[in-house]
Amino acid sequence: MAKGGYSRNIAGASGTLALAAGKLALVLVPLTLMCTVLQGSSLRAEAADTLPVASSARLEQGADQATLTFELSGPVQATAFVLGDPDRVIVDLPQTNFALDPEIGKPENLEPRKNGLVASFRYGQLEPGRSRIVIDLAASAKVLRAGCENGGDGKTRLVVELSRTDKASFRTAVQAARARLAELAQPKKPIEREPASALPVIVLDPGHGGIDRGARARGVVEKEVVLEFAKVLAAKLEATGHFKIVLTREDDRFLSLSERVRIGRERNAALFISIHADTLSRVAKVSGATIYTLSDRASDREAARVAAKENQSDIVAGLDPSEDNDDVAGILFDLTRRETRAYSHMFAHTLVNYWRVAERLNKNPRRSAGFLVLKAPDVPSVLLELGYLSNGADSLALNSPDWRDQASGQVAQAIGAFFASRERNRPMTTADPDLAPAGKIPSSKP
Image 1 (cartoon, helix red, strand yellow):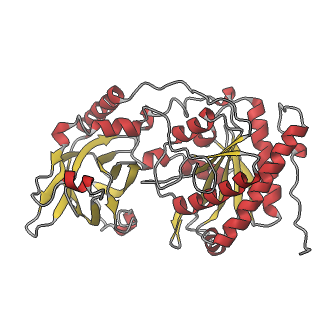
Image 2 (cartoon, rainbow, N blue to C red):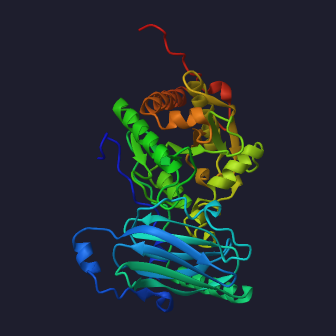
Image 3 (cartoon, rainbow, N blue to C red):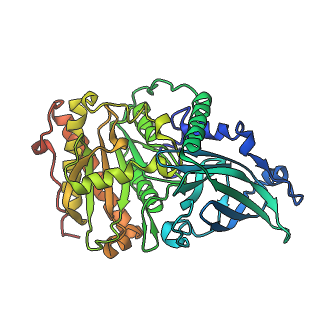
């Protein structure tokens, strides 16, 4: 049992592309170079339970070549391969502490190059024991080398060297990488549900994590604030004694969208809440929380934009969507049970009512779109956007322990009211907002 009483759940779906890509590191020998640095030993570092540290990164590129260099505290083994749609170079390496500004690889922070090969790059933890560098390409490229070298100054450097190639050769390399990934991926196991719990199971899903940082504005990072919020909410729900709580992640790690859905289904969740925060760089005045449900057509342009952004999580982490879509993207909307959708809408309505009595709501607080993380056909699911990091007031609130305590309390009350209402009402086949309990305005008495 984790601190605070809620259940610890880190395991995801077996045979995911992330694991397959890790195994690929053992196979793509031509692109793998072992560091030959004589200083220290990776075995001794592992025995000492220390991680290599990347302290700086530098990109140098011209029209036909590019070199991305990371300065490291010690040698690592790196493996590189290419993926398409979008075109990327993936570099896998043992878990590494990237002690540098995570924003340096963004396009706006790179030296402008009209005909450069690299558009942007990012890095972070993919899963325990493994980190990843993702290089977004502006043109087709091949990997000339990806490995460590010992500079004349005695420092260890991880060097990824790219060269321009033609589109046909790039597509051939992508097909080869996908074929190898498919060979190494373990067969998908059918959903194996846990025995029914005596208490309703609530799955809280802090969005993003690891290499996928999510939104960032005003010094606040989405993956961090949503994790903190989920932990506070989990503790409040556990304290009631009425629910069994599962977190999809309890630390800074990446989970694919299909893994998140699978956790909810395997745990026999009675409710799945994916927690996020948004940003709008051009419209700082937009603020307040929004609750999203699943629909085959977006309710409006803003809902479509948010869904498109959140559905990019796997691509941000360097996963190949063509290899990881059978649990999520392959679930047809018309197979999603009406009752599940009805309960999803019912909870969304309830949460809006409880949130509005204490916290700020977006001017259109209930929206819907095709969120992949909400596609479990048998688990009522909503996505809660806590607010906008691009808005000054929201950003301050999301980073405030006092605000988290108060807002999570409203969510906990909404969950309690939702299940109380389900006990009173028969199973529904259509959404009926009138069945959803309204939030109670807190008494002004001390």
